[in-house]
Amino acid sequence: MRKDIPGVEIVPGISRRKEYYRKETAWHRDWKLAFPQSFREVAFYDLANTDIHRADIFTPSGYTIEFQNSPITLAELNSREAFYPNLIWVLNGKKFKGFKILKHLPDVDDPKLDEYEFCHSDHLSMVRKTEIIQGIPNPKILNFYHPELKGIKFTSNLYSFCWKQPHSVWYSATAKIIIDLGGHFLYELKQRKQLNGNYPYLKMISRKTFVDWHTPPEI
Image 1 (cartoon, rainbow, N blue to C red):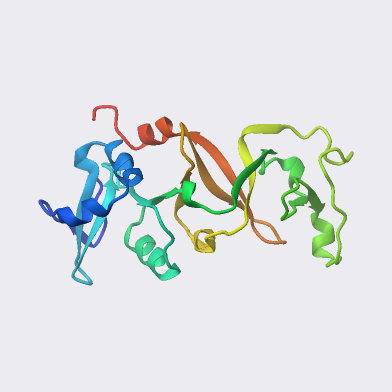
Image 2 (cartoon, rainbow, N blue to C red):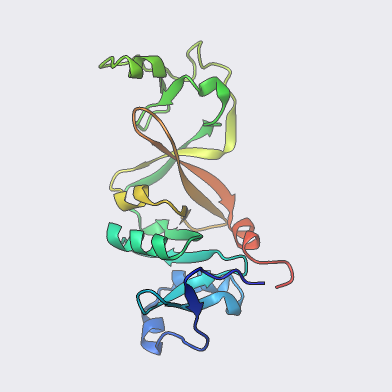
């Protein structure tokens, strides 16, 4: 049974004009085709604001998936996240400038790292949390060869990355963000909460797994 969005009604039989589809990118269309037709372009009537919203994908379990090929404003991001309670963004990362995956990371929630914070640099390193709390201007930088960190195990699916010209609005998102760089794998943009500023990192998942999660077996 489909879980609908509170305060809105699904509007059957409403589709976007042909002119709109001609403007859609091949990337956008290919993603929609990965899901059953009944999931695509689901229209909702906003009872409060008398507006019609169209979800790129709306699943029977109540998740909305929006495929974003270009940057958006913070106001637009907040508007869509407020309207769709279970929203997932899928971003076309192939258009990001200065974006590069760097190194494997340890488990960022490993209890052995509770007293350390990741440095905000392209080089994988950490600082002691106590030095951040004490306000030391230049805390000692520790790499993973340091005796305090040596032996920490690294994961196979978590990565550091650099983004020289970031679309910073995405760091303000509250919904899940999936970055598509092409190929069989996707990368969820996550953030580790830290005193010296949240540390963004990537979690790799397969494209097939992502689609399967949101497509019931009977479909």
